[in-house]
Length: 337
DNA sequence: GGATCGCAGGTCGACGTCAA
DNA sequence: TTGACGTCGACCTGCGATCC
Image (cartoon, rainbow, N blue to C red; front, side, top):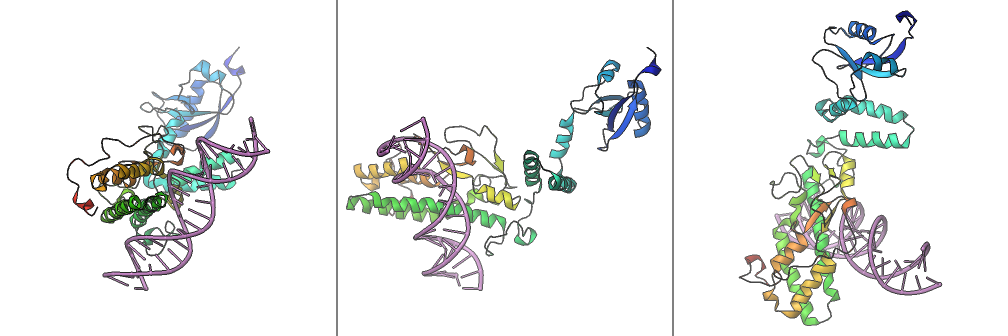
């Protein structure tokens, strides 16, 4: 069969540096290379063509087996193509040029009907629309929508958010006194609660954990505001690599509220009963309140976890019997007890 | 075995009080 | 007036016990 009798193959072709595709017809690979080099102004020497999807370089035989409208990339001598992974890496490195991608994604989203694709585009937009570099209310008013006007900066609000959570724990520790029947024991417990309150005030309710402007060893996030899930209470790390930047945009801020500070050794099931038990057996002056304070209110026993990694069943972790009682002199802050 | 309930783990917003 | 702090109630989810 002569070359003239071969059927034209219809393909879509683009160059490495252009996203615009062109329809092209050729009977063989050599002809396609020639036409492509002319169109994209690429020197023919060393040029080649590969599949868009995975970078497979075309041979003449492979070209003849291509389906119509196959998507191809024309490469100059020193260029390489790794498939659409290349496009994804471009996407991940959007940086300051993210505006174009945001506009494009919004355009696609407005016309998209498939729920799955809408979800993907929505998630993409959520993570690209990043104003995390702004800190003041005037620079990102959308982020502060619905947030009390007294908060002038994102960090101030995030600090307050963390303080509120810790206050909630304190409130629960306080109300646990109602479960103690013996008046004397209840009295001793209340004194300990007062000590915890004093220490929490001194520590500013550990609001530093969510505040990106705090020192590195005190905060749970990067200086940009990225938080990483620390994994379920019984895991060393998060297998799903969950991460979030509530400073980035309003939706991320709202989603962050679903992240939990999870007590590894559980507050109500384990720590508080252990504290009352210790009070029952010893004078409160002998109890290691530093240990209990750390278990209840500090990152020593708190893990920041994505809601998926928050296991609500019994943790079955117990207090360390060796740490429950005081060995040496108590720290100054707990001298009130 | 499925439905229901109580309890435990959390979160939030609204509101009141108080001091600077 | 403002910001810090405390309280309250509402809401969610998961687990285990109990009942039918």
